[in-house]
Structures are given as C-alpha cells and as structure tokens.
Image (tube, rainbow, N blue to C red; front, side, top):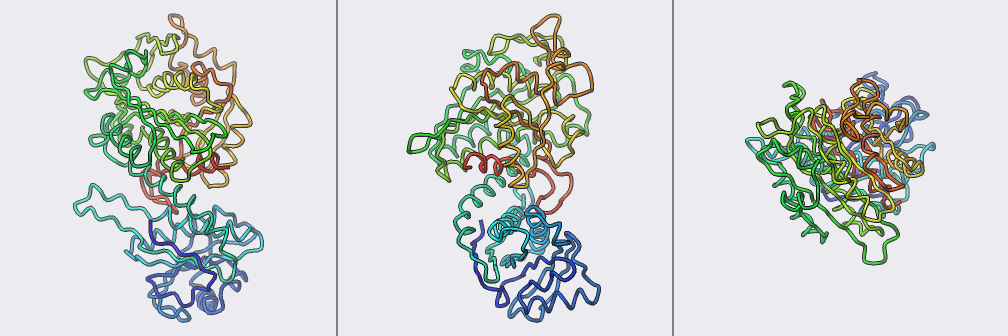
Length: 489
C-alpha cells in the first residue's frame, strides 16, 4: 500500500507527480478550489474537455498548482447523476492512467457535491485510487510492478475524521482484492492444489488463523468422494483447507464461507475447446476470496467467528478421470449421476457444503465461478446470488451495492428441480437443458445444505477481458470487499 494522507487542504500546493481532479460537467466545475477551477474552466471553455463521465485530459505543469508536474482532469458527468461508484470509477480511471505513466506520488482533489455525503465521497476516492494501484508483473522479464509510493487526498475544507477512521477497513478490503487478483492471475503450473494449500498455510501462520489441511487420505476417510472424483484425472492430488478466525471476545455469530478452488478446469473428459480454457486458471477464484477474506477479518479483528473452507482440485482428462455416466456417493450419502465432467465445481461444493452444514453456523455462503449461464444472464460485471434466507440475500445485495461490486438475486425455482432428477441416482449434475443453468446449479447445491441460512454466489464479475476504470485486465478481485462490508456491518 502507498503512504496515505487525507488533508482538508485544497491541493494547490501539492508537489508530487500528478494531481487528479474529478470535474462535474457544466457549471459544477466552479465548486473546485479557486486556483484549480481556473485551470479547469480554461480547458473547458476551449472545448478541449467537456467533463463527460470517465473522460481524461492530462495537463503538463498546470498554472495554479505550485509544484505539481502534471494534472489529470477526469470527468464525472452531470452532478445530478453522480453516485459513489461513479466517483470510485472515475478516480480509478485517472489513477490507472497515472500508474501506466509510472507516476509515483499522486494527489487527488475530492469532489464536492451537495447530493452525496462528503465522508462517503472521500471513501470512494480512496477506494478508486487504491483499487487502481495494481500491476501483475510477477511473470514478466523484469518483474518490477508499477505501484504508487504515496497518495494524498485533498478535501478542500471538508472534515476528514470519518474517512481516516475508515482507512484500516479500506486498506484491508483493497489488500484482499489485490490478493485475489494475484492468486487468480497466477498460472496453474504455479498455483495448484498443493501450492495453494501451502500459501494458505503461510498466510494462516502470519495472521494467526487456525488451519487444517486435508490430503487424499484424510479426504477418503472423511467420505469427500465428490471432491476426490473430480481430482482423479490429475497428477496433482486434492486438498481441502479449513481456515478458522475467532475474535478475542465472545463471537457475535458464526459464518462459514465456502470457496470453489479448481486451480485449472480443462473440463475433464467433457473437454472444453481451446478458447474455453484460456482463462481457466481463474476457476479457483471462490477459494481465493475465502482465503483473502479470512486474512482481512484477522487484520480488522472482526467481532464474529469466520470459518473458511477451500476445495482445491485440478479437473484434468486422463486414463484415471471420472467419466460421464459415473455415479458418485457424496459425503452426505446422496448419490450423483455425472452426465458432464465439466460441471465439476458443484461436485466439489456438494461435499464442502455438507461439511459446512455440520459446523453450527448462523450463515453459510458459498462462492464459485460456477456457470457460464450466469455470465450470459448478467454479464461480466454482476454476480448472481440465490439462497434459502431472504434476509441474508438482501444483506449481501446491500453490501455489494455499497462497495460497487454488484450482486443480482436469482430465484431458486422449486419446479426446476424436476430437471435434476436422475433415473439411476438421487440427482444428476446437469439438468440436460440449456435454460436456467445458473438456477439449476443453485438447486443442485441446495440438495447438500441442511443449514436454514445459506446463500450461493455465482461469480460472474471475477474476470475482465479488458482494462476498465479501476479494474485491470484479468482477475478483478471482486468479493472480499463486499464480504467484509457485510461481516463488519
């Protein structure tokens, strides 16, 4: 993380590399500090900058800013339409521009608007800049990532105390986001079940989390037969990792987070095509979110108990692979007819959800890159959520809205269960129809949950095919921030 300072100053005396100035279109530019407003007014009057949403204009050695080398004007659009997330994305867009230029010392003028709470605006500014401050360079010839050294936020007289108090949570959430990005961007040759479990063990030791790692022998004794079935085709043996965070005082409640951790998904014998495999190193994102969120909970000393379960496997084709037509007896005792080995994530989660159901949790939330159908339905910027507890679902939706990582509720349509009935087993792993694939996947998972309060999140917003606002190309890292918001709320 860069060194962060939040000041009630105007920013006109900033002496760093670049000053980012978010600007409303039209007359609202006059709400800027006077010296900076003159610069923005001149550029806008010359029609070089209209302050359209996400429009960026660089100015070299701008007049009115004492020692700053560059100013970046970024458009917010009309004030009446502004939201916290628009501010977050606009600042992030400018910050990504600054990062690619190699600028290290960054200042930002927090925009002033009567339509939004100024404390939350400051938080959005900080989050936008910090989320943009990411460069995955570990596998480049010169693995030196571009990152900011310092970040100064100027509020032009507004009180900074609330934003300062929120800073530890902002840093924990953004740090967790970056951790998920790192893990999901790592090639599957480097991040596989064994190395992922080793990384979890290292982080657990560093942050005083309880940890238990189950290998093939322990999984066989524990009847994790669905997990083991998915792993049969790989030379890399499966791991199930159990992480435990407990507060120092008596916990207010107990939450179990369950993450799909398929470190590479070839589809197994139901092989994906080449294009479908290109990003399948990210099929462990659910497990990465669980790990990063547990670390963030420890950093924030959250007042609740959080258990994390990570099911780590590779889904590969070989002579030992599980096959279409196989029947698996899951940990719960229910049998599953496998019709497609590329519907493997739900098999891993079936055993983990049964395991979680015996942990006396108040809430169980699973997170998985589960279905392409959810991406088709919601695009790659919104994740689907469904569950058995409407209050829980609504709290997750609210947390996603506050953090700008949007969730959308999908229904668990009871009648669709008919499509999952098998003639030779209790349930089959696909419905056999292309309609409602995300919902039937959620219904499949519900067969293995005995908790009254469960939610399933189908991660659609976990990968970006191009750079946009504060999101780089690749893993977006969405998940820990809204989870932390919910957990601490």
